[in-house]
Length: 173
Image (cartoon, rainbow, N blue to C red; front, side, top):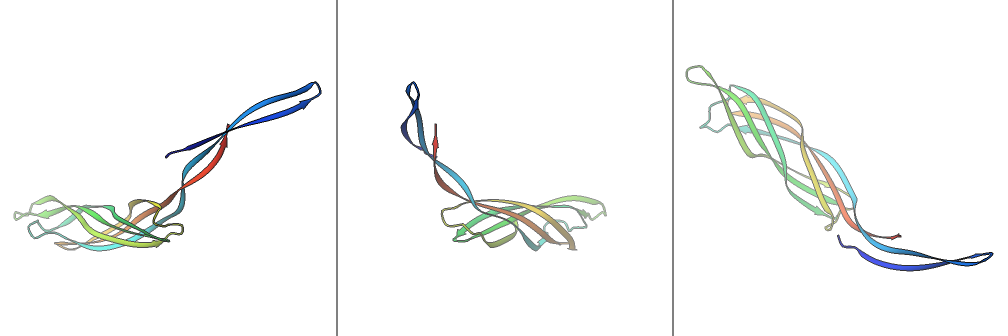
């Protein structure tokens, strides 16, 4: 940020019994630029979907773990509201049965497996506000629906903070 400095010299005279004294006091005015929070909100977004294991991959016998990484892909701001959209990457670690009846461990990583979108009212927001977002996984539930399908329910926590650059003038010595 850039600052503008304006310097003033003020002289104060103090009268005393034996004569007057003069004191110089040098003050300056600074224009300060500060980012102020104009709106802040944390919401939860519920998403549901079915992860389909491709035909060329072995069928799922048992799920060992399922991890989801949510991410914000786009933020649009309007007067008084913000719209966010994002996707979730999924990592599945599972056990399958081989033709011999042996168990084998496999992994499946799917980019942008599920998507979410949400619009929320946020007073004080306009086109000039700077929007920052944070997203995290709050809750995850999954079930093996069939040997090739996993039902997934996730709750995503999204935090949104809107700030605006404001100028103040301050007197300093």
